[in-house]
Image (cartoon, rainbow, N blue to C red; front, side, top):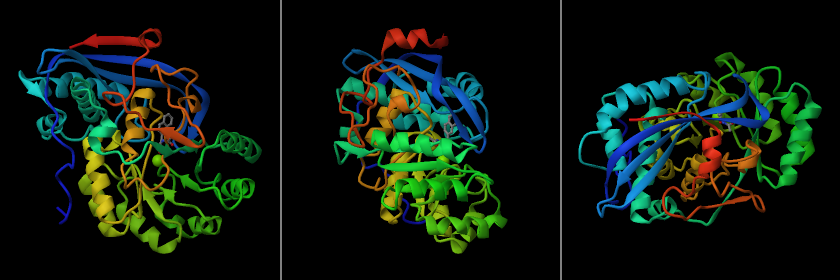
Amino acid sequence: MTASVPDDLAVGPLEPVEVVDVALRRISLPLVVPFRTSFGVERERDILLVEVAARSGGGDHVTGWGECVALTDPTYSPEYVDGAQHVIEHHLLPTVLVEGPIEAADVGTRLAHIHGHPMAKGAIEMAVLDAQLRAAGRSFADWIGAATDRIPSGVSVGIFDEIDDLLSAVQGYVDEGYVRIKLKIEPGRDIDHVAAVRDLIGPDVPLQVDANTAYRRTDGEHLARLDPLDLLLVEQPLPEHDVLGHARLAEQIDTPICLDESLVSLDTTADAIDLGACEVANIKPGRVGGYLEAIRIHDLCRARDVPVWCGGMIETGIGRAANAALAALPGFTLPGDISASTRFYAQDIVTDPITVDDGHVAVPRTPGLGFEIDAGFLDSVTTSRVVH
Ligand code: NPQ
Ligand code: MG
């Protein structure tokens, strides 16, 4: 392991809770517009929620909510939602649910011998953490030491075949106040598309691109054509395991390389930084196994002077609220992919959907991760629910 990696969390103690039961709920939410990336088009989001019914030390009943960010198909990462539910039911819950009190940090410890499945593990940890925070009457933002009351909001824009369609989509988001634009790119829909958007928004609007692994090591000269467009970063141009390739690419292009899919833990992030492959880090709690590991990565990057921002997985208001709190940590120096709920969903499953005002999202400060469930609407979009 790399030296000087922080392995202690700078958060205070939180009373453990006693788990009564765990429900796995699946919901289906249509997207307001199809979202196209280099790996495909999605029209609806099939999401797994983890509901931990628990008792506090004082005997109060609380329910903690976790959102699993796995997609329908294993196209972004190896995990997918049916697989996540299977591994949770058959491998994770039987190990986690032992008698006695539990705290969020126990989830990772108890599951350390099970390889992979960070999104599945992270969803359980998230639900336990929400339950603990609710039992303690504390907000996640307060507990982690969130530094601000609002965070700048960026938007992720899907791939369009026609540049005119891309431009009208981007103009709409600029009009809504988003302070940073991220364009999804792939070979054939990259340099010209990005140049047209830069022309449209002018030199002062922060702009970045995300390839979701669509390029190869031999594409260095091609990707250098992005350099004159003054981008904040290019995200995950090469396959997730090709960390060395990203280090070599960083020598060939001026646009900073940001890793997303490659960063699956604190250790992989430390190594990627040491290799020169990660000039900026996208932190997604689900991808790294939960919010606690995400905070450790934030602390590492801050110590190494690597700018970080909070990525998104088209979460409901549950994950969106928790991300908004996380992104208020001081090392998150770039706007994240935390947009309004309405960017993706006509209606959210929380009573207080995330909104963007003057280009910013408020950091939630209510007990727990920072949301309340709209039970009626949630039930109306639920496709299954199993109690364990
Ligand atoms: C990324 N997210 O940064 C991801 C990829 C992603 C906001 O760009 C349905 C279809 C859900 C595509 C969730 C953003 C998705 C999706 C995440 C892509 O790489
Ligand atoms: Mg990405």
